[in-house]
Length: 612
Figure 1: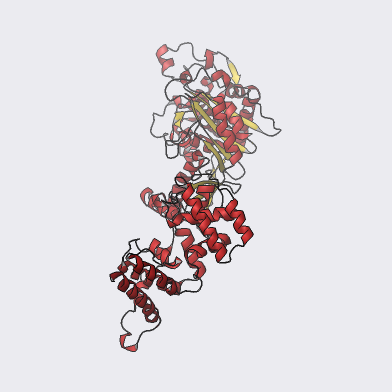
Figure 2: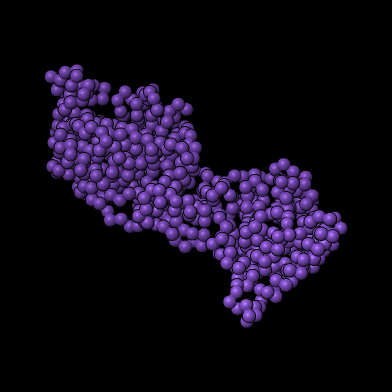
């Protein structure tokens, strides 16, 4: 009897609420109506559903999906993109009078009332799609009369504020399909690795079965249960006239095969860098400190933003594969590739293995790059200051009077050349091509250490002001990152002018309205075109007949670069460019040396793969 009166009261209250929502007497005009009270809690911001954010490659391919807060996997679809079969399946099974009622179904409630009185419990709730959406977003799932009344009030108010299409859009994007998937699109991707508009009728019916009880109808653990309910869904769709007998028979006979997928992150090396750069972009645009920028970034990721990048997937794949081909498992490496025409970062590799969220060698590791640093610290500043020809003759032999202690400390004129060669008097062309050390020291000494460093200020080498700045800088002893080196080298592709290369081309909200873009930056002239042309000529000769002669790119255009080897072969590097791309490669062991790899020229081989 208690159950009977409870449901009687709900039915009566629901009908009365409709009247109260629509009218108010003059005597209570100063008092809020029930609709106003409920409506004050219905805010479009509250109704906003979090969605996965996406990172796009240059060709429009989605390469990464970032779940919103709490690991919620949702790919939000506007109503016009929801497949018609999905709408029909849920209306047929969950609320066949959805397009007629005002938020609650009085006839459905009456049927549920009879069933519940018979059982003595609340076995059927007669919840409409609108009520279910209210329960998912505003209320809990308790089976009490108080909650049921709140549900009716919210449902009616929502029907006054939103169209049926808007309510269906929210519903089909909010319902839980199990295994952290919310909404039909995320469910389709999770269980079938397909977009929802590619699903068959049988697959739609199969997915429609899950939200009724995601535990009982979990496809990964209870396939038989889900298939049985799928048949019931198809029957309801046929009864409601959404499908005919032939379509029903075909769908019933179709075998459902799961193709499980996880959120995409095809190139974690690159996409992790994009997240770092996005933080910098927010700081640069909004003027936030790092903590405030991180809060803003987290807030945006909850909303489901679109980050477009310059990533070239084929180049990224080729670069990554080259590390597996060229390096044994105990050797590490890193590389970054920049497209010259628009200064965009198109590929990044941490080396053989990389796990998202971990230390990234290409950006976070600082190691000396040896002679690959000489064009920046020695030759370009010297040419800029003196205007000297690349055919100027210099002495390349260390002094005979140097003590062993002076050699060990690399005092000016006492450092040894590679393999202890004594070439005598050579041109700067030869000194550069064969990477002699004595001329490099002489050039830096002529310019002056502080003046040479001043030329490099636009590149913002992080460790430049942390380490001892002496004549050993001439030999490339400064700890630098791959990221810093490729940024500096891409200046040689732009007549001596520098602007930072970026990965992100634009950030957009869920409506594809622009949120962030890197602002145009004025180019900084680091050195003159004349100096730049001299360096390009020298780097070209390195590849033609110098230390980089093992490079065998088939191109009629420009190829140039500089090799680097550090003390005792701890590091092997190569930085250089073609007409189209600039790239830096580093190879080394975290502890130990790579002299055993030096004859195989792995850094140059990887560089070829990067720019080919």
